Each structure stands twice: as structure tokens, then as C-alpha cells.
Length: 477
Image (cartoon, rainbow, N blue to C red; front, side, top):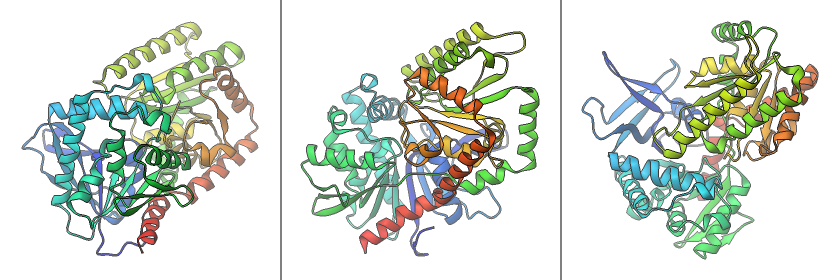
């Protein structure tokens, strides 16, 4: 894990800490949350230690929750500290639900007509980023690497730099970064760019995202940009800009997939679906994930290939997300109705084409679902990386599976050679790809899965973090 010295500690800063606070009769309990950011970063801090600063998910202050706690799960883990930041009801409404998730999230994914430009949202976003800066500076002693995460905190690097020019500041964006023609719609685009340029190194999921950022810096703030080396001249400093495709802890997924408990639940899934082949999709319930389009493709598949009726079940696991935002409430209703209509159309006796699970599935059980499934469909309309694709292939020790992958994911750059790549908007193509996957010979499937496993194993999350931190160390030397 990189060449950090023993006296150099790591501070990760993100909107949320990776643990949810659960109140029980025995007191407060901390339960690890789900999501790409947690999957990627928790193993790093668990292994080497450090501090993770973020919102605790609760509104206002609570006396029951300490400001700092130590978390540790495995016996062999070092563990790390969590520091909680309190947000007010207004902060949550305007900074989180507002500017972060009704402005930046849709804009960065290219959903222009879902994007809201609201001055009150922007003021709140500035205010909360300042709050984060104050909390981070409390824990700075001088030798830390401060690694800021994602679109919620784009102003934070410059706020920190303005207070202490000697800080070692890194940033990674987990979402896509839009092309200049889309980004320039944002009235506060200049401030966002300048905020990120407070860093020494700005990281993106793909080379395309990094190039989009560089071009926006050139056009909007007229900075001197070197597209070949990936650098921006700003405030008499050289800021490095590079892509670092994020990943997962391959060995952990592999280990869980081979445990007896996983096999037990996997066999239970198969027994409940005897003589049936399973297709799985997993994601947060979000309009960027292509769930609606995928369901239309499933409907078209059963329409076009009736021979598969009663022989194939599509399992859609949707994790509740942003349940208080209007667009997400409406989207959930739309998906519920669509699932009901398709099941109503094709269901026969004891068989329904879609098994729709709207809840968080614990990781061990999720891996059992992966292991039991013949196909995994990862078909978002736009995604920064999408770690589900990497989780699925890592959970198939026997190689019996196939990945159907959207061309609009960051993971397609690494994984498209050994996947069935589709345009998620092309309902016909996606339906045909399911038929192709189901009829593919076992040896061909194994060849593809094992090749994908090599890719994920070679570029796991520890390699990702090492590359990121080592790149900074070389650039700084």
C-alpha cells in the first residue's frame, strides 16, 4: 500500500462516514453502509489506519453519539477513527438533497433536464463545505495526506489550501465529469473548478473524465493546461490531473464467495429456483442506473424469446436511495408499476419473470446471489465506474457466469473485451444479448470470467490507492 512513511497519516474526507449509526436498547451501534465509495476506501483505512471525516447521517446534534469513535471489524485489521460532522435540517435539505443531488449529480451524469440551478442550494453548499474545512483543520498536525472524496465537497480543497498552503491535498471524483458543453451550464462552474484546483492531485475514473476537466479549466478559467502530461497551472502552482480507475478488494470477495455460509445460502437460492436460470442486477434505485430501460429490455426478451418463459428469472435488487427527494419518490413509483405490469403480463402459475427486491442486502448474501446467478446485467445509462461488475466476476470461483455491460460505464474501459457490451438505450440489443448469454457454451463463459478476474485481481483497490498516492509522491519529489 504505497510508499507512505510511518509518520504520514491518511485523512479521508467524504460527505458520509462509511458507518450508519443504529440506536439499540444497549446503546449506539455502528453498522457499515453500502456503496462504491465504502467498498473502495474502507479496506484501505482498515488495513493501515487513519481518520475518516464525514456526516453521521443524523440531523442536528445528539448527545448519545460521540464526536470521534474507533471502528474495527476483523481481528487482523488495524481499524481507524471516524469523526462525525453535524448537519442541520436546512443543510440536509439544501446542501445534500439540493445542490449535491439535484444539481451536481444529474449534471455530472449528463441529465441536463433533471438539473436544478437554485441560489439557495448554492449558498448552503458553500456553507457546508466551509463547515467541513473547519472540522478537518482541527485534526491537521502537519504530516497528513488529506484525501477528499466526490462531488459533495468540490470547494473543500481550496478552502483548506487558503488556510494552510503546505497541506498535502488530494481529490478523487467517483462520478463522471461532464464535457465542457454540459459543465458550462453550471452558473458556479468557475468556483467548482477553482475549488478542485486547491489540490495537488485531482483524480478521475477515466481518461475521458480527466480530459473533460482539463478542457473546462482551459475554457472557463483560462488556465494554462497541458493535455499530454495532465496538468493545470493555477495560482502559481502545478496541479496534476490523472485517471485512476477505482476497484474493489478482490481477495475479500473471493474469500467470502468460497465460505461454507455463502455456499449454504447460494444452494438455498438455487433450490428455490430449481430448473431456472437467474439473471441479476444490483444498484441504488437511481434514474442514472438504467433500471427502467433494463426492465423494458427484460419485457422485450420474454416477448421475443418465449421459449425462456418459466425457465429464466430476473432478480432486480434495488437499494433505497435519496428517498426524500421528489425525483426519486416518483422514480420508485414508476419502477414499482413497471415491475407489476411486466409480471402481470407474463406470470404463469408459480412463476413470475421478475423478482424485485427493494432493500439493502448484506454483502455475504449479495455474494451468494452473484454466485447463484448465470448472468449479471450492469447497464446504467451513465456511471463513473460501477463496482458491481467487478464484484460479480470476483464472486464466481467456478467461472460459470457472464457479464452484460453498458458501454457507458467507466468499468467498460477495463472489462469490455471479455463482456457482452451493450447500449442500454437499445432495448432490442439488450434483449438479444440476454439470449446470447444464455446460449453461450460453458467453456466460453469460463474463459471470459477468468480473464475478467485477472483484470480485477491485478488492479484491485489496494493497487488503486497505491497508484494514486505514489503518483502524488513522485510528482511532489
